[in-house]
Length: 206
Image (cartoon, rainbow, N blue to C red; front, side, top):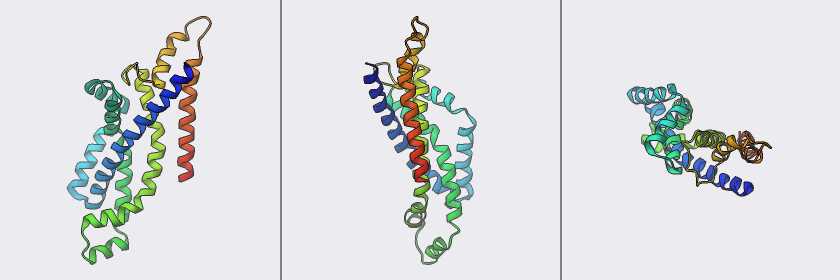
């Protein structure tokens, strides 16, 4: 039973991580490219938005959003996606500011190429390696966030397999005599293994 619940937690972790990445990456690319390439008032507005978001503790904002949206995998993905795009957006903005002054961008502008084509065909391909590495390294943080939310009781429903739910259920089991430790060990071991493997994979990509 413990092994079965651990495997169901793997599915939940990849569902939440994958769907959240699909929310975070396009949003961060769109806002980061816009702020870095155009600058001026667009940059000021986007910078103000992610500065306000980053000033609020992420876990508190995620808990508040889950309580508003309701418990469920899709709701958690929305809450994580809305709160986790800031770091990637800031990095994309900085890289775009650096690339917009390069010779190939100036040459494209001199030839009359539109801004959209410059962003899609010239700047974005140079940002993809950095985005892929950042997304891979951030995937494990998304898995950890889901486990924390489920442990606090605001994550996925109890009937959905989750490592956070396993750790939450293990709190009462640890107070028994003899101690029932295998639920806690299986969940923490799975989280550690997944996070470590993803971090090693991200370092290899880097």
